[in-house]
Length: 239
Ligand SMILES: [Zn+2]
Image (cartoon, rainbow, N blue to C red; front, side, top):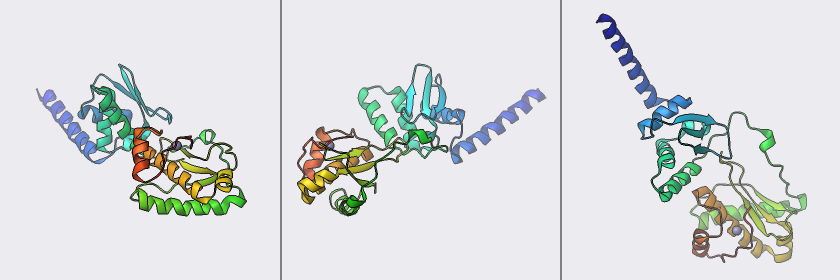
């Protein structure tokens, strides 16, 4: 009797400690995160595994959910999106959840892997003045056409683009790595106004990416392009 009573106190203290931890500290292990997800409705049958895979940030099977460890620090609405993604009742709600998950910027991993970084062309010194001007236009257009919603990303002038006029490079899952490149040949051949028009086109892709929308020339692209007064021509490439 006494032993049973002591054990009960022991458990009670642990439960209390646990709930304090849950309230105040971000989860640090797969177990912590699973407890939190179960508290938000995740079926207890899943085991949870943390990964470092940047290209597939979340996946699941009947028995296991694999999720990038960057989500350990995610706020509650993102945790809800994880539960929704795994247990969604419809394609629609799963794709809403996916959007929410991708919109969350993963913190940089502690050990960045060098091999994963793409080697990028740098702006040719003779094109630096174009790059600076484009950067200034990016800031102005962001304020005048996008309510300053877009982030300040690198703008580069490329000598490698032959037929393409410009391109936008998507964010990595950790939120970094996006950029806009405008063709040097395009600027010289078609003139400055056309180049700024291309920049604006690529900014619509940036807007799609940062909103968690699909980066394409679909309906949302065309509607946004129209609303800011540009022609929704598709020949400016998506990277
Ligand atoms: Zn495009």
